Image (tube, rainbow, N blue to C red; front, side, top):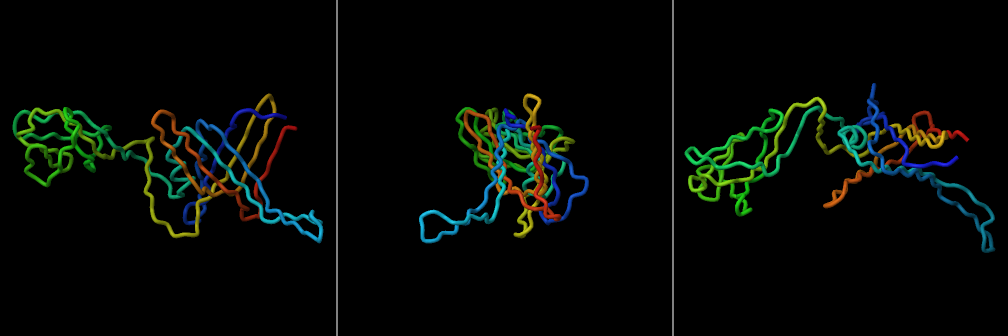
Length: 252
């Protein structure tokens, strides 16, 4: 039997960040899986006598490590598989450099209308389009090169009337597909766990590997200037409550 390609990887959350079992968990499929490696290793225990080579060999502690690289990441990977704190439906987004123009007459204000009928939450700065220089934020009564903002209403100086500006801000909005979650400072000890299913099919043959209990130790998201981001999630497998690690199966 030979294998080709990265295969397909599923993970089903089994316990959250507090160690509580998850009922009716939603399985997560790793989208656009690029590659995955499963490394099974044991410590070597060698017994020597007076000669150069060992006279006995034993196995010590074992380890199963999984590294999965995926081009698609979603909220379930963040909230359910890695952090174990779950996720909430809704958008928490950022708009960068929204183009606008300071009104030519008083009161020289611009009111932000976030996408998806969202709600403005935080200002992230204003640039002068012509010069590329940032305007300075003040509490009130801005003068030339300054602005103030309250609840999504930006106020500019009369001296800047008619100027083109780029506004960046944070907002929230409702959504049935987008997800968000909070990163909290959890107590050390407990960790979220998942059950992993790996399958690779090629030429009518297949390899299946199931690991009953895994915990994620690292999530890497490398953002590049001129390439796609390939995210990596690292897992370690351990025995479940029954003492079982999992199983493997092949067609040959």
